[in-house]
Image (cartoon, rainbow, N blue to C red):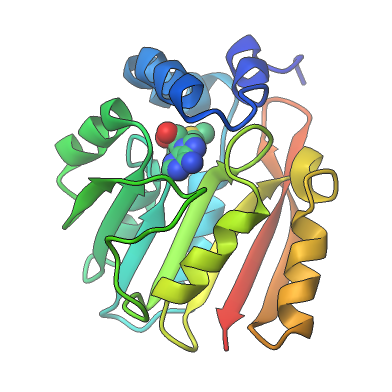
Length: 209
Ligand SMILES: C[S@@+](CC[C@H](N)C(=O)[O-])C[C@H]1O[C@@H](n2cnc3c(N)ncnc32)[C@H](O)[C@@H]1O
């Protein structure tokens, strides 16, 4: 194991400021895939896609929330080529890389810390978000809008970096959602996240009630 990559250290210090996040990821977009997959052994997209695909029917409409350069879309489509995948992200430069993959139906810019007002209620059969619910990015308040746009019974798969899980209120929010009867928690698994560093995440699977 090596020390945490300096870019990743910077990423988790962004304090949720949308302008800072957009600039940071615009500067990083070109080398993001190589830096994450090869240098740190990032497996968020793979574990999240696996967890979602096994809970979906063959044909399903899926949202990749915080799609970045489209790593999750590629993991989804390699497991089930019949899926229809939309993506949203805050950073236009990252969305351009997703667009170039040709795996997404619609891609649009959206801030997951606010209202996803361009998306109707109850339309997605499943939602996945890898690498977004983490320190300095999107907090647990971002989950509510995902519940609104997912169909009842839809699985919602999130990776939550373990440094944010309790400290940023994700654990408490997931427990509260279940107590309030809004979700059923199907899985919370502590997993390696950056396999070449000592960084873990919680793989969280919720079902919308
Ligand atoms: C670490 S990348 C993860 C990208 C992709 N899901 C993956 O696993 O490779 C984090 C992404 O979250 C996006 N992001 C950060 N804050 C956001 C927000 N408030 N709303 C939507 N996207 C956001 C960034 O633009 C960036 O593309």
